[in-house]
Length: 386
Image 1: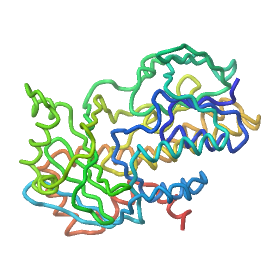
Image 2 (image 1 turned 45 degrees about the vertical axis):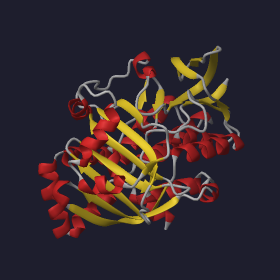
Image 3 (image 1 turned 60 degrees about the vertical axis):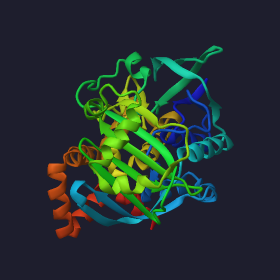
């Protein structure tokens, strides 16, 4: 019987597990994959992430991994329109391949029992009676018991359907595409290249690698690649005709991986932070539009919030009902406005006819760009860092 079982070993799951283990709770983390692993991710850690890693006592380890520093950003559109701005503080960029492995080792050193390569397929029970989790791998089926559960399985999972989670499953869905390259260096800088129906981020990570990660409306991707054998490569060539800055960088770049990583069915639909007495963290609770550049920080922060909210319940200082209400209220207060703004910006970015006048306005009124930068991230964490 664990005090807490965390489902998912990404940033949100590790953040929650580390915090709870350091408060002397019996914590298990169950991850369906193995480490190290590559993930479809922009690999951009916005400035407030640094403060969260400091609170997790992981910052020194992060610095040894030699992440790239990011201070400035550029957004480009068709017809050579662009906007440049400064981040409110220095950010860093590091591959999930390197970061996740280091973070899971840190979790183990804090006392978290880590189970990898085994997928949770069902969760039953409640806070009053305890939870039973069924997990399966290629070799075995295991049963786990816990007083409480935090689910941080990422953007989507079959477990959502098993738990009958009630969030919209229709509407716009997106395709994520990612690969590492060797190419012209972007010194302390990140580019966000837009095209009809999508956008692509380019930034340095560790070891002189450059990460390219894009998000595109699924219908746009389908239309542009209809009948093509190598859909992703064809789509990359399709982007060249819509964004010359992206095409110019890619012209001399060399891929470092054998193939592009892809993920489908990505949704920005409103989910829920609490369901069936279970706390949901990270993208499992709600995904911010990737263009905001705050997804990894939000995952880390929501993991910390879930741990800090659950702790008083586990030591008997508050009731289950009060704990669930506090988490839901705190989650909404912390993230809801940023999620809403992110969805608005997503619509704005995918339409060149709207984006180009917007970039002109941001160049004319620099304060507007600074406002967007500040309001898509948690400035309170930046203030605490300072």
